[in-house]
Image (cartoon, one colour):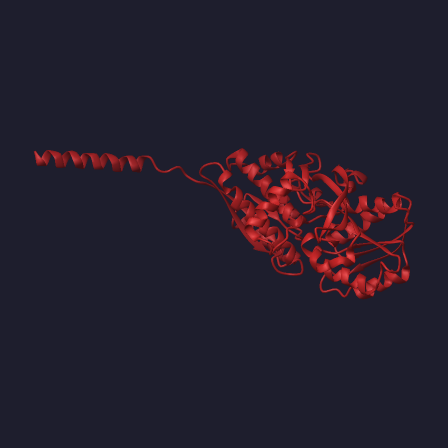
Length: 396
């Protein structure tokens, strides 16, 4: 009798073991994302602002992914060096076989995506207008400099200021900023009486501010990477440009939210054009700031780069959820064309299906004090702004 029970138990164990062998656990789908940013170099602070938002989004929303789907983010530092960025993108494509590239503050990696047919979602900065035309596998959720420079140029002319001057960093974003303000200002009836381009790395702004003071324009448009905002504003204060009757204006890079405490009251009343402010009273922004506060407390203030990266992750997660993590490059691009998010912290956004570029509100902001703290207050909204450069320069 005991032998029979032992034999029966042996059969039962064998059946259970065979069931485990025949029915393996469901395989996990892993979506590999290559994230290239400038964690070192002269724009490292910008990358840090964006990375904090990426980390926070993953923490808050990883639970929303489909069962058995995981996103693996392969993070790379381009050191703010174009050639390094290109090499890293090549390695991520050929060695790591990433399904999608994202990020970048500066790196010119778009041409590689056309060759490899790998989608590239610009989600931090890289505001040069022409980038999506380089490759059909590029889409953008950040901004273009023309979206901000052209409106603030027109606004400056409408203020009655007749003469303008531009001072920008000497690389593609600065050139786009210079051209966009100039176009807006001259379209409004103003005249540019001078311009200067400043070095990108460790610049001494004082000599350039002296040139502006000597030229005595009604208004000067200043553009530098947001990481250099405090240094530039201190040089403008030391040369007393505002006291000399010269009005200052810019895109949002001149007054990033996280640098306002360091810039101080010297910039009160200054008008800029931008896509985001922490002072914005929108439910989605309130929720974003609450999550940021839980994660980072008062030690770090988010800015427009943080929100751009947050929205980039929203688009990527939406793609993964819609496809359960299984998509081709062309399917990803079809998804991104026309992707919308009505509840971004910066307001409603979408990707234009024709240009694959961001469409978003642009806000005219005035720097005020609210409850003792400096804040970029939105005083006017230009809704659903497409990239003006593309409208002035239609594709052939």
